[in-house]
Image (cartoon, rainbow over all chains, first blue to last red; front, side, top):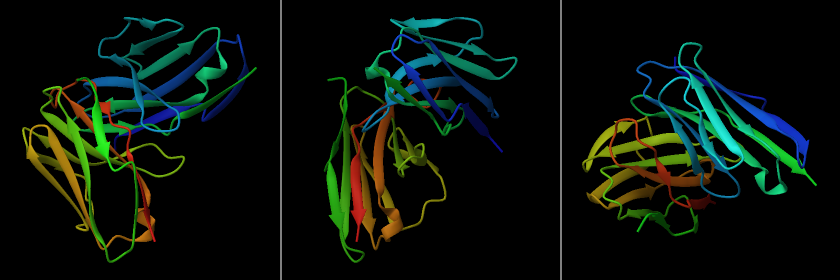
Length: 108
Length: 113
């Protein structure tokens, strides 16, 4: 059965800290791995990763995929209170399967 | 136009009502999706349409009936729902079914009384 597992499930940090969120997966016919940020409503797209070892960066966020070890990490540096959200990892094969998410709380 | 829109934003319905959720995108995407998301849970895929044809139905009860009238529109018809069907219903679209990113609409928050 396809699985997407995120860790930690919950994380509380202070502004300025750096965080690393983890996503491991076991799926058939892997096509891509996506990271989303979800605040009050719909998930908003952050990154799509298809190749191992190539880091994607957007401001203070970056992500990388390891297709051999079947995991991805999402890094956030110099965290701000506006980074507080649920971060969802999803893997695309024939459909799309989400992990349970990591709830990040950034305190002032 | 680079967004997915959904109407209504909120919906309250009784168990005997019939209602419809609507989703629209004008990005030329050929794949559209319905997801259900309960509180504090990740989205769960319900249906996938590709080129206006139902591609995936993830064992969803028949009280949910999807419809894709054209490549820009996706509806979800609701009939005889149960209180446990209360959730956030998310629509998404992507250029195709392969490995492209899915873009989500804002969702419809449904309450079944």
